[in-house]
Amino acid sequence: MDKCNESKIANELNREFNTDEPYAAVVSDLTYIGVNKRWNYVCFLVNLFNREIIDYSAGHNKDAALVYRAFARVKARLDDITLFHTDRGNEFKNKIIDEVLDTFKIKRFLSMKGCPYDNAVAEATFKIFKTQFANNYHFESLEQLEIMLADYVN
Image (cartoon, rainbow, N blue to C red; front, side, top):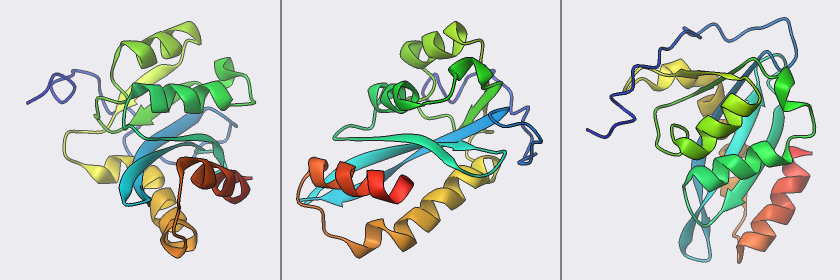
């Protein structure tokens, strides 16, 4: 078992997926997309207030840098985000993301181990994304994916 899954960080969101305040709660997850016979990855940051994808990133690797780039693209003030909820993937629970969350005083919540229902909004967002977008195209390059992803999100 990796250290992330052993983390003592609680699931205080407790499947309460509605909030009355913009940016009070942001959830995130990653998914894979086929690009020229190779997996590439997409990270979404989703506002629980209105289910809007507030920003995203795409890349060749499923890592903390992918999540960091999604945060770096956010146009809103990061210190308006009160909490950040994800699954227990190492892409989310690491020093790079810890520093972002600490800098902007964002509280971290993690899903219970092995429980995708705890991050249901992010999971559902990717299901819609794949149905409406990703499964309908053949991407030749990461650059093509990024251009088309920008159109989809915006």
